[in-house]
Image (cartoon, rainbow, N blue to C red; front, side, top):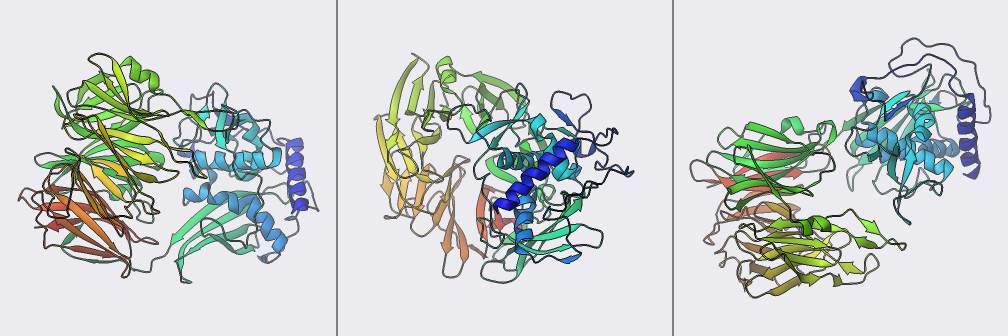
Length: 618
């Protein structure tokens, strides 16, 4: 392996020393790789064989007979040393980068973030990271000047021009002219036969008669030999014949076992088909905000080239989108969450909580104005800061405003705070919890919010990559109730349309009135819509803060989700929906024009068995 790594470094030095052999400059404008008029963040490289150039000039042949790929013969490649070289040089790095893009027939089709991340990981593995700047000592992220990535973009993708400034998911610093990338694991060499974190296997690698190398990254269904997904990458040789290749195309194929079974009164919803990927999986997170007379309002976080936040109004009868609004972020603006709530004197509004203000929209998605944040709160909104031991010293976990606009609740590295704007006083509701583990010394509080129109406060207790329960602050009595659980399961509870992640109780099931703080039995005591529910055995309760509760109980023995409904008077509906062999998420529920309850449910199974359905509850 050390020999291969040395050869890789020598090859890179050879490519850098040769430079650009042709003086023909090519611009790429496909898929917005190069935006006209953008100069500050465009990476330009002269090349003779850029993507999209059909005329190829002859180059001086540069022979490197020691290169591991120089003298491969057409046919299946079985040599372990060569396969390990290909795996580490191309395929393994593709798994966390371009694999996530899907199909492409040329590099200009790929989202630039994945190409830059691929090139950056190669740069760091060959040059180290100690010379790269970071925002603070001990940070896993480092700045790589875009100029330093130019030869890697050419070497691995045959690209000569690149604009990295306008693509979501890529942290580009204009002042430094550098990308900010994760350095973890960049110096590791991997055995292509060894298991990896994604269950992806490199198989069926061969060289064609035309000199291209084609390999498959395959995933299989659990406990079977049937393919779930095959991602076929094609590597094309550079014209100088050194044995170097660039990634030319990728094709993904999905396979289905048709394992999902749905039983009950439901309707398939194709409203969001345009946001589905090739495998039919929804390429967006959908959150239920509220219902109005003839429609429901949803917020969406869409991934990919059409990424960003959207608000959509969906007609109850036709299930079609009747209005759609893109939520544009201004410069240096971050949207923490979007919620429907009562704020006086505006009434019921859609509130966008940002780091600058609270932007307000009416139920028709028209702008109403904004609420400026108190200066004391603005001073608390900071980016993550660390000390020399890589421990958090400053952090902000979100905020909320009370319905009368007099109180703010917010959470930071010290704990959970309540700010009273009538006298500019601030109290610490609860300091962070000292719960030392191998991952963290403390538990913090995230996404604090007021319960309905009351001044009671609800917040999630955070763990490492999960939640450890929740906090309830009773405003009138100034008392704090902590509900901490240890669980490897993380169900979803939604309070007034806002999603919170909470752990399942390993104790007795709990139903809690968030207005009074009282616990009561289940299900007879479903008498108030403001409550949290935890059940033994992967059970969750869901409500929109208005009518009743959707319940989901997972039956592990039969691998199925049993979905039901309890109305606001505690009456359990006889109508049930059963979904087998799929993960289920309740997006929301509403009453149609006939007064019947309809629950919007998404399901996700292995392969391409995914969809959105409407559970019709009578």
